[in-house]
Length: 219
Image 1 (cartoon, one colour):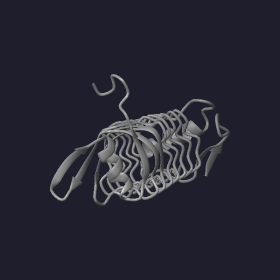
Image 2 (cartoon, rainbow, N blue to C red):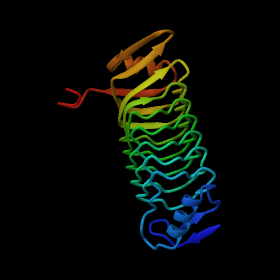
Image 3 (cartoon, helix red, strand yellow):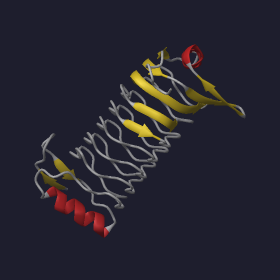
Image 4 (cartoon, rainbow, N blue to C red):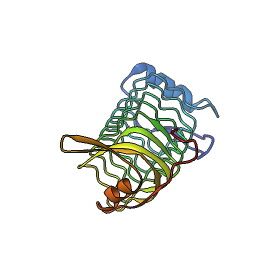
């Protein structure tokens, strides 16, 4: 393990280095760099264990993060646009105000993660797990949630313009959202909003209120 005192949590740790030599060099330099955020944009970090690391304001745009261990890491205000996070372990991680636009989270584990006020446009999160995650104030726009598990997750004034299907689990999902959403049932893709979306979610065990659209929003 490579460890150095950091900025927010006081912990910069790399428990396992990635296979890629360039990414390894960048991580080693980062552990000795004091207060500067990690710039891993475009790097291949597969094989790395960055669990519990302070990655505040880190740059991971278009990085390869497949199957990486980010358990409990602090990714506050980090940039993950276009990142490949398929199968990544982000359980218990902090992603408050992170930017995830056009990233792939298929099959990723985000159980108990805090995604408050996250920006997520055109994200592929099919089959991802968000059990007991916090999605309060998140902007979920054109996010694919087919087959995803949102059991016991929380949403408060969350933009919920997502794609769901009959395999999307919403049991215990609680809070308030803005519509519309897209739902695939059989071969039919429907746009549902307002009371219809509320009924669809709550008939599947959610406890969600759909809020009226903000003035000018989506107009």
